[in-house]
Image (tube, rainbow, N blue to C red; front, top):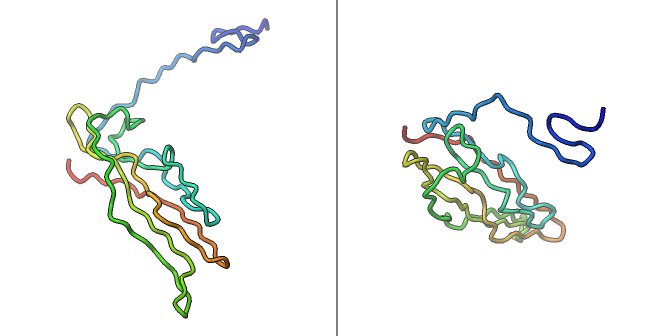
Length: 148
């Protein structure tokens, strides 16, 4: 062919979007779905690797593809500090990981619902003795609708 199509001029690198016969998904505030990441690494080889711009999860109405489609967000809020620590048989600390849970809450769609977004961990401290290895993965659970 001559390098052109109904979508654009291939030789010039200009491409259009193919027409879609699909309508946007219907939004159902009674059905809560998860967005964001369901699993991500917070610590790898004793070093924090968390990227809060992408490492988070949210619970929004079915049909919503981005938390920015909702309005009236509050927060962020944080939990109290939590930690897990491992010691050897003589009581010497081998590893420790401290964190807080953080999230935004209260987002709604046209005044309906109260949803959560950007939920994840805020790393406090991570420690591993020279002979130890610390890796931390964060897994979000399936959202639950507490009030339809």
